[in-house]
Image (cartoon, rainbow, N blue to C red; front, side):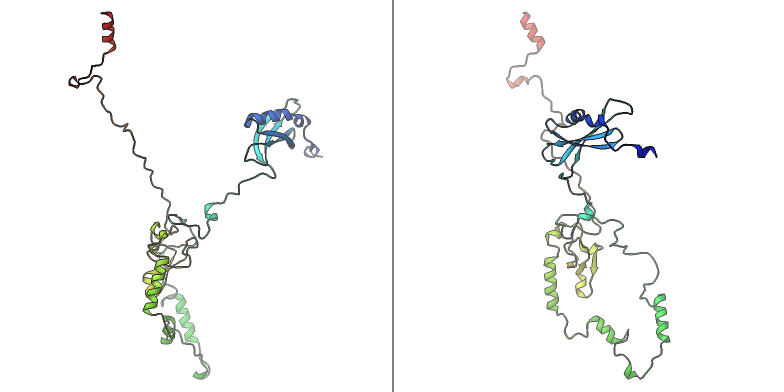
Length: 308
């Protein structure tokens, strides 16, 4: 049997009986009158015991003063290791600290608040990459070339009457459908203006949020452009922490969740001094001869007058 298994789990007798020593150490570390009754002990190891005392300090309900005592091997003198204030099972504790980036919720941003974005924010990417590769939908891209070759290899079976009536890609009908020309009615100029006025009033440059913003939405990476004539003045916000998330915003609108916002505190300016201590004001020891006042008498002159 190993030595570890032969050790007793019973607290050391001398350490367990050192209640007065532990109380004295706790009273020395705590404020006067805040160490309460003895609430038990805990065996920490061989010849190491922690005595627990109730805490009467206001605001620390359920906390306990823990005084740890110990003695050396084959020694009969018990000494104090440490005294700390620890929470008990029913102690009032502060909630677990959560970083601000995880505490933040949509709608928390107010006028004047800044929400900086990290350099590696997954919601943003560089606006340019510097690569000369063609876009995927370009005519010279490898994907489009393979698609054209596959379409050329297809063989139409059956008479034309059995073919699909869906407009083929690139035809006038398909382009008209994308532009919305095939709709029975479209938004009129009055409808455009009324919508623009409504959006400008809700998320425009004159709102308190925009007035306190560090920069407008036109330079924000979370702005999603929209097509048509309204795209020249509006876009859609795609920042979940912005009060305008998912809304049509003016390009001149802005908030503290701007993608390039950075917290840059202003240099504190001290108040002007009431008394200017940087300037020396001369004060004459004797008044001017024409002032009419009695000149001051020095100590030497007063001594001479006393002996005369």
